Length: 453
Image (tube, rainbow, N blue to C red; front, side, top):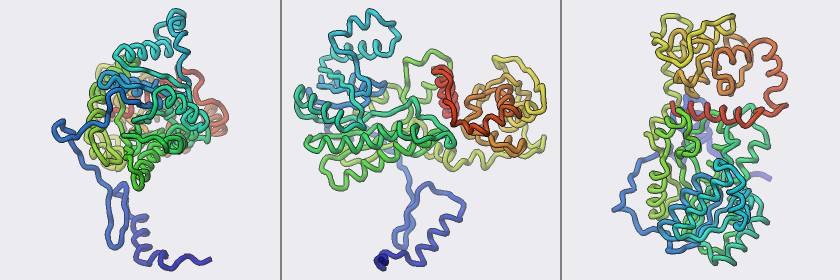
């Protein structure tokens, strides 16, 4: 069957598309409409208290928080308890022990136990005047969610609002070459299929609002964020799609990183908090967002967003950097006062890696035990280094290598002939990527260090 001729693209539009595909990219998102070329931009707004409207919250309203036992979920639950003494439904994959078992659990488990911390937090929230119902359910499982909503309706009645904060941050970081169906599924279950289930089971609920907890990764991407970014982009698009023909306006909020207090026991975590949204600031933004009407998507960035787009998407710093082999092409700075002593390269591969780092970072005399991220290394610089090493050594090097091997010594060992043969054969797929929880946390910490630069 021939397509309707009215929808056949004209030669003019084909030429427009070819021009876009072949030109040096300068814009992130473009759309051709008639004779016009539209470019997506972001305009900053200030949500002053005196220009916002009436809050959507009700006194003792019923609010469902998916991912409600996570860090952000519990912070927002505490705010709802303080302000409106809400009836709160905290939904998570694992839930909590039965309430009559809480005291026994607290007495028999360490204070740092994850479940113990959540129990104590829920007790604090209840002390503020809220009623709390913790339910274990997978947001992507329709049967479990139907049962959960039935329990809520029986206990509290109609749901007034939803905060959709479900997600899987533990497995969010994954290089493209390592991405598997399982890892993508982990992100899509919570942020894609869970949304389909949510809309279906809430059809009979007269909501005042539904707010998605999305991420700036939708706009800025990030090394290792392929599935996570895609899942959050879906949430953003779904909010726009839903609002085209539904009376209750849903919104997607692209949050910057939130401060995680319970992990701030290192110098890095203390530094990271300077670049992240504090719980106090996050709650204030959340409060004002609930006063906006008919807004499908809002971005929350603690730093200038356009500058970050220039850095992370348009890669201006890479384009402007001279990375030639000319020894005099860069003025190198002194290594300064580092925690590690300078130890020079011991073999040819270490020497190649060291010189590449020195040129990319602009630092002289980098030792084989100096940490890439402590030297100021970023995701962009790591891409540059890996690209240059691949040219010089003529081998494939996964981008994630620097995150797992952040010193010249460890990276050079990975690049040695025996281990490189193993890496190429296995392609980082035939065995688990992380040998332990400790190693997984270290890799995630290196990703976060890089994101600060």
